[in-house]
Amino acid sequence: MTQASAPGKIILFGEHAVVYGRPALAVPVTQVHADVDVTDVSRRGIWINAPDVDLHAELNTLPSDHPLASVIHNFLFLSRVSPFPNLEINIASTIPVASGLGSGAAVTVALLRALSSHLQFPMTDEDVNAFTYEIEKLHHGTPSGIDNTVITFAKPVFFVKGNPMETLGVGTALTLIIGDTGISAPTKESVNDVRKLWEADKPKWESVFDRVGRIALEARYAIERGKKKELGKLTNQNHALLQEMTVSSPELDRLVSAACEAGALGAKMSGGGRGGNMIALVEAENIAPVVEALKSSGARNTIVSVLN
Image 1 (tube, rainbow, N blue to C red):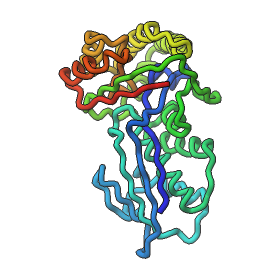
Image 2: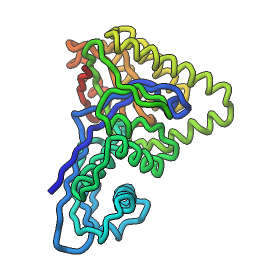
Image 3: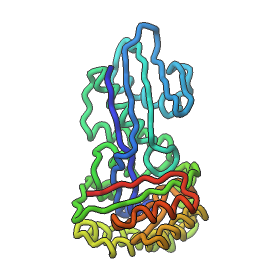
Image 4: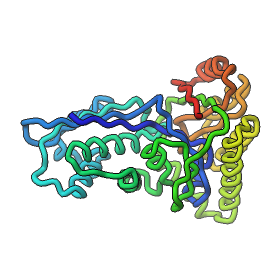
């Protein structure tokens, strides 16, 4: 048996604007992860078990554009394995689906690493990242590339599409509380809706994206210098711009407000929006009241993540 794992991720600043060349900040969330094991079997075929999504099937019975099938088919083509092996692939994930935590990219990274190791086709982190980005494009249209980058390298990153990845230094430990609305929110829809807004009035939205980009840049300096209060203000400013992009939702806004009223330094939605997750920046002593406020305001789940 060969096993591999990949963490979740959360975007701190810059979602949506990152698609248009502005910077974004994102960090891995190791408290949730995707896990894959690959085993040789005697029965013919490649058998996939993913109980979290109630999938138990042989590879060739799945549509070619199925997310898991596309990873396996593309890997087998890339590695030129012949004859095709007989395998059982077991996939499990604690990352909520369609919630902005990078579940799809994490499963792809873990599956790819398990297959490449098991079938002795070595892949560098750069190889894994590039492959995963191509898979992301199949399912998200025009993704930023941030999910695959953060999850592949498992480090905080400052990211500008098309530029080399920069890892992020953290001046002081930051405590983040992730609140899940429990509402599934496919990234592709919100990305496409923002694109329609941009196409209808490019000067307006380029200006909005510029403001988001400046916030991300200021946030990088605040993180590196450990300026939590400044970071909290920037978090609130970024959320207001995401509301302007129409990608927030009443549920997200309610959780953001509840966190701030309970003492968070700042809060914002994270990811594609229209559901999924929000994040709150808190002092360590305020974890309990903010978690309680989020749960009382409808959060399905909360995750406390420390960035250091």
